[in-house]
Image 1 (cartoon, rainbow, N blue to C red):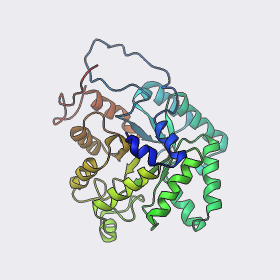
Image 2: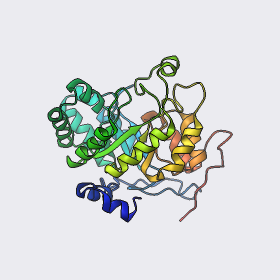
Image 3: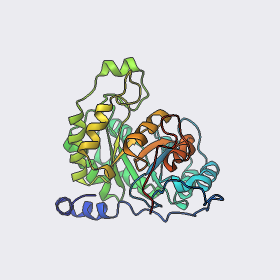
Image 4: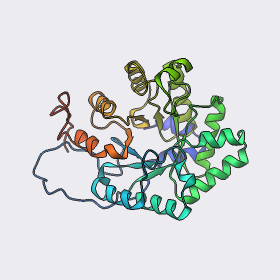
Length: 305
């Protein structure tokens, strides 16, 4: 949580935003297991402040309203947010898009645009009128969170921070995505990313702190260059981030079972993670401590109520 002093230093719009960042929608229907007598880890109920899970929506595979409703009817208590990728929502019929967003809300999940702002910025040459129209349209459609990515762009930190403030002014929760890899976000090959180079972890941490001061409700940590498309994981970067930034304000991209297992092993069951929608069952079992691999089976625990 932000300290009282830090909260007072935020712009007026951001102070209110920070205080209500966790209050999105009612938690949705609560299903009761047929096996309440079997022990499993205690997790915070929705809307929770730790152990958030954001799932990828339409991109690598279609995620229809029917599918999403069925998925969240079964597993909604383990899902906090649904994120679009690649700007896929801009190609959908408006009525169908609104239906998808409403379905997520019905199950107590927020909906994120993903980092499509990069395309808006590059195609408009940073035209503020176009950017504001994009923000207003996203808000009108029912989006809750707007991810601010710049893996492909070179943008001054102060402009990035201004985007955080502008996003909040339009009633959306700004979620900057930061990482160490130049050219992240396009699923490039290891060789391509290596040739592009990486930044120092301090660059990531400094900017994350700047964005939190500007009113960001959370920071997404880009996995490319750290655990994705690398020859060896940069666990030193993960450790640096965890040591320098407030845990409840960071979420790690972890759309690979080995990666989210690593985060759960090292952060505990309350790590904030982004995964693919197809992985929610595996992650839920891991968080609850009922199943795992040889290195996690019976080893993931939480303190009960």
